[in-house]
Length: 75
Image (cartoon, rainbow, N blue to C red; front, side):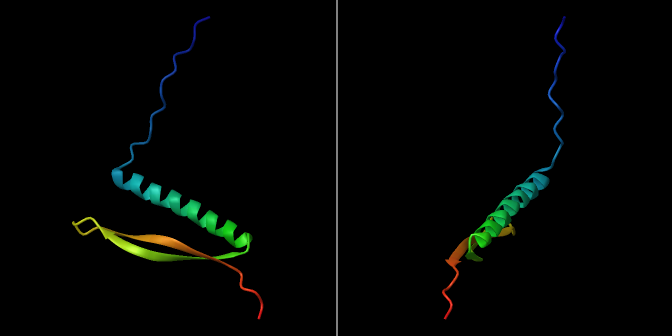
């Protein structure tokens, strides 16, 4: 019995822009899930812009850092 010939599946022909957007969207999804888990564990989370980076040709992006704190004791 001969083995069937397997060929690699065709990958979608994504543009550089689509790949960049997909990477940011996936990272945002993971970040949102991490925030939800922190909330469930009893923490408050605030995302704060730490910097804005520029590429010199008009493109820019915000970079963030999380501020996490425990629930404050009741007064």
